[in-house]
Amino acid sequence: MVFQNCWVLHSMSAAISIKQISKNYGALQALDAVSLEIQPGEFFGLLGPNGAGKTTLISILAGLVTADKGHASIMGADVQSHFRDARRSLGVVPQELVFDPFFTVRETLQFQSGYFGIQNNDAWIDEIMANLDLTSKADSNMRSLSGGMKRRVLVAQALVHRPPVIILDEPTAGVDVELRQSLWQFISRLNQDGHTIVLTTHYLEEAEALCQRIAMLKQGKIVALDTTANLLSRYGSVKKDGEGKTDLEDVFVNIMSGNAL
Amino acid sequence: MKNPPIQYGSGFPTLLRKEVKRFYKVGFQTVAAPVLTAVLYLMIFGHVLEGREMYGRFTYTAFLIPGLVMMSLLQNAFANTSSSLIQSKVTGNLVFVLLAPLSHFEFYAAYILAAVFRGVVVGLGVFLITAWISPPALEYPLWILTFAFLGAAILGSLGLIAGIWADKYDQLAAFQNFIIMPATMLSGVFYSIHSLPPAWQVVSHFNPFFYMIDGFRYGFFGVSDISPWNSLAIVLCFFVAVSVVALRMLQTGYKLRY
Image 1 (cartoon, chains in turn orange, brown):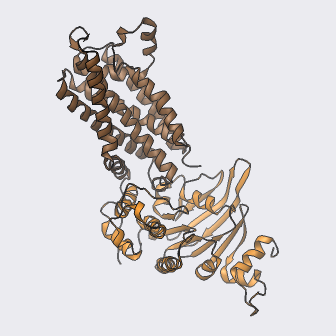
Image 2 (cartoon, rainbow over the protein chains, first blue to last red; image 1 turned 180 degrees about the vertical axis):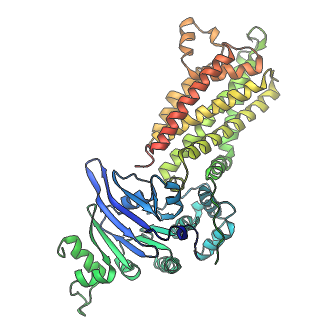
């Protein structure tokens, strides 16, 4: 599955560029001058405890939240001033398990494709459904699907307009092991095909296995940004398993507690 | 797999189709039920006030039909946008529309045209059934269509404003029951304002719904409480005002984008 359209046009740009983004909700500072660049083709992890600002950052990239300060762009298109290009380049899998109870899986995907101005997209929709094992549920109403199936539809909706950049906001929260594994196989394949993947998750072993580079957010600031290998070697401590190994959970705890800084 | 280049168009037609399909899928609730309610109004009030003449030459039942058609049309246009938005907000699925590259004009046009479509379908249903009971006059069909479209577009816009503003179903119900319903019921659906005491006639002139129904009724009878041109001017101004408010809310992302 290769989506080879708009990102070729912007191949010189960073997939995601975030410059000095700040956002306040009243007295709460959700993001504090966050800057970050993610290159095309990266598998990038955005980690942090609850309330660190991950979803706010994703929402700013998706145009769901407006930053108080700073700029963000997707494949070179500013998310505010060139919102059409930015949103066409971006697929977002939301954290919440949301769906429209009026429609079937196929209708849901056809509508989502149409919102992006893409008509007659049935061949692509069929391919996405086949890849996500949704074909047998194509004509089922969304209400009748299990939580795992609804999660697959969310992923399918994010891919229906063939975006070069895909953001998954805790896609495996509350998902059984089988679906998690098949989902990661599918997402890894998309990444191998050239797609930029940004992932937030609380399952740190997933992030360690999948992400080439990781940013850690704490109270609206980036407190660590490096390759996964470098983070493990710099911030890991000798581990509890007695074999001297460290893992990302260990690194995460050290960074968040301030021990490593 | 090799993909052909993507041809991007506007998301507006799909959003319009989705909004129409949403009410079509529950047609008993969204179309048949309001038609039945209007027919019951006609049967009860037509029977109770039988023998009364309006404008000196029309039976009360004939007079009532355009008012009931317009009332049903207005209330259902309001219900379409307001219920769609509040449901999408409460369940969270509005995010799928917000993630798409739709401008505030496309968003507005799709929701309002779907509201107009539902309003006209319900109004037509009421008209066809009540016309079978008492065939009405159709003096100026163009006036009928003009006021039907503008009335539905205004109420669709008000529904959009209410649906965006309301955070909970009871806030929307308050908007509907304490603003839309009284303004509609007291707009001359069931009476000519000339039958009211002078003070209430003056009050009625501050109700924009009065002009929608009076102008609409003019299209049926060629007779109205005030000139249809005056009604058209006032209704147009009201349409522009509510559209500006609705578009501004969408453009700024009021209660939609934070």
